[in-house]
Structures are given as C-alpha cells and as structure tokens.
Image (cartoon, rainbow, N blue to C red; front, side, top):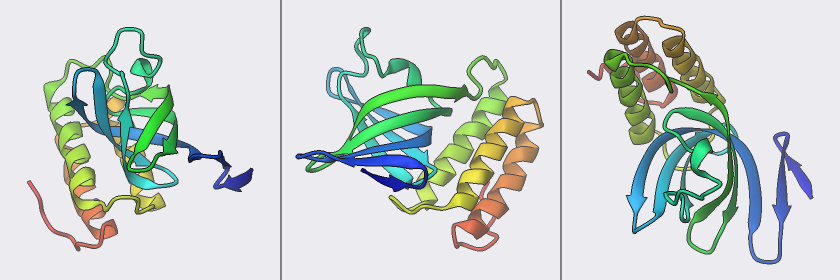
Length: 166
C-alpha cells in the first residue's frame, strides 16, 4: 500500500481502491436504483462516480451522498467507471435550511464548478474556495453576496479570467 496525499491507495487484483473527501455537486438517476454523482474531491478534482443500488432503502451509501455534503468517499476504478463503495457524511451543508435564495446560490456555485472544472483536475485553491463559500452560506451570510464574490475568484482560479457570470 502506498500513501497518496494522506489517504490510502490500495491496489487489488482487479482495480485500484481510492479514499478521499468530496463535496457532492450533482446527482442523476441511472436506471431503476443506481445514481451518477459529480463530486469535487480534495485529491482528485471533479470526478464522476456511480453508486449501484443507491436509491434502495437498504443502501449503506444513502446518507453520505446528499447534495452539497462533505463526505468521506471510497471508490474503485473499474474498467469503465468509478464505483462508490463507501460514503460517510462529514458535514451536511444546507441540510436544514428553508432559505430558497441560499439554496439557489448553492446550486449556481455547484453548477459553475461542474461546468468549468475539467474531470480529474486537482485544484487545492478551488477546493478551499468551495468549502469556504459553502461554510459561509451555512452560517447565514448573504447568499447573493457570497455568489458574487465566488464567481470572479473561481473564474480566475479556473483559468478564465474575471468573467462575470450571472
């Protein structure tokens, strides 16, 4: 076993086993019980992962894959895709909020990260900005103000300059 940024990377006979922290940006139903997730990970950047039978009531993955949650994730790199095998929630951002403007700003931030970050492009500064912004929204800061400060800083970090996206 070799160490990878403080998290274990194990090689089995069939696939690599990865452990990381990630923020759930987006989810989409796949088939009868499966789901696809877009996750921004500390060590791997934006990653698309699949959870088999995640929508079943007995799924052990359900609690750790809520939108905008910070979760400890374990996944394997299969032949064609990354399959989630463990998801433990570490922090639930906006889980109990009734503030629609806060949710709207959070969705817009997640969409920007999903749209402008390339797959598996690690970026510690984007990670820190995303975590900080979600924390500020959780603490009750003005949602539109958070979004307006997030956009130019994120676009600069993503390599697009200080574009204005509304």
